Image 1 (cartoon, helix red, strand yellow):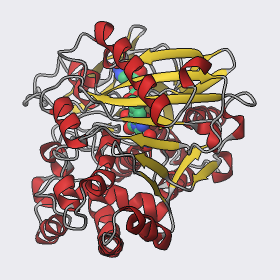
Image 2 (cartoon, protein in one colour):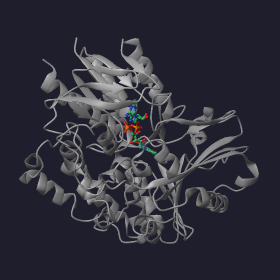
Image 3 (cartoon, protein in one colour):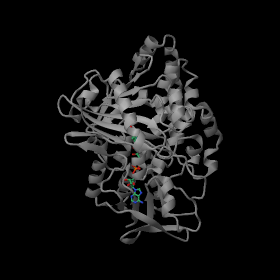
Image 4 (cartoon, protein in one colour):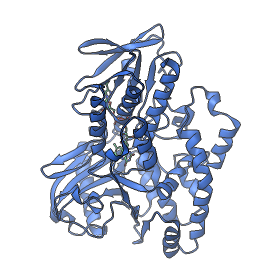
Length: 487
Ligand SMILES: Cc1cc2nc3c(=O)[nH]c(=O)nc-3n(C[C@H](O)[C@H](O)[C@H](O)COP(=O)(O)OP(=O)(O)OC[C@H]3O[C@@H](n4cnc5c(N)ncnc54)[C@H](O)[C@@H]3O)c2cc1C
């Protein structure tokens, strides 16, 4: 039986392990932490429990379909639909509710921005053909060689998806009002990119929200890794927790296994699921030095506030965005000036709105996410508490009356915490989704042509970050591995 070592039990590692196990491989996952899931984790205090990282489920069919392929029955993961999708609270006082139904969404846009409904209809209609083409081109194939990417058909699709413009400029072909441009480009923040620095291809995201919906996992996203862990163990896979992989055994251009504090272990193939730039440290002794290149740019970071609150807000939706007077200006301070913005934007997760069990009766758990730079250059210890206070005060004024008096528990997490947990540069979403770190320019599931038997899956690897997308990358890595080594 062939043996695979998977380095890391993030969603990419667990998905790879299950897919390989299904192909009859003997799989061991090595995880340096004391639990599986990586970024997908819970924060907990007494009766309060809330997701630490991902909250929004996009592309549910991709997630469930890959789980099924990995042998996990889809009935094991209960997804709850969020409709309305979310609310956008503008500083002007307007509140736009985003909806699944196109007619209702058009009416909502017309109500707030008369004359702009047509732009939405046109956006959705164009994306009806561009999305399937974009998914097939950018999410379902890898680019081992530059020439696999620079084909006439892909270049033409890139043009149609406005890859040469920022996502904010790209949606400007459909909408005029600044607030609508905000509402249809802020999605690049989900993967740590600024709307004015992330290529127009990512306008697939606001389309996908309307077309496939926004969901949440009942019980929290962090319920998912434990399901995969149980499945893998029940099928004979092994998971070694508290076991850091400290090196890779590479001999004559072939990856032959891993090293831990307990010694070396042989494997026919290795899948690396740590944040990709950190792979360098495991390859130090490799003379070919395949990772020699300019340092990668990390994605933005987040200051997160987790709260347990003795109150429920009957009218509040599960997901909400609160925008400052100028989102563009605020994000330029984050991405260009690399500082905490004077007027931050923030996202609020309020799971009790669709999941009654998310908090004790009559109470809530809340999660506030504020986009900030990566870990470097800010004294997080010094700055984060004041920022959290400002955001809680503003959330109270603009959507959660009585919030601060009802607070029972509060915890703040910063990019410095993320960096301590091994996330590259303290960015939350892997390497930044800028043009020269996307598609062919992103590390590939088979990262080095000169090293056989070594594959990679995770947020910093093509096709990129976000749970279903990372799972899709894991699927590509395993398919490539099977193609090369399956026989
Ligand atoms: C605050 C936040 C909010 C997010 N929101 C969303 C969202 O709403 N929706 C969404 O889809 N996505 C969201 N994401 C992104 C999503 O969480 C990630 O894209 C995804 O979880 C990354 O998975 P991964 O496979 O790269 O593994 P990671 O989660 O990075 O896990 C890698 C694992 O490898 C282990 N490891 C690393 N090196 C070694 C080693 N040498 N030896 C042993 N073990 C090692 C680590 O300990 C870790 O457990 C969010 C992320 C964050 C941080």
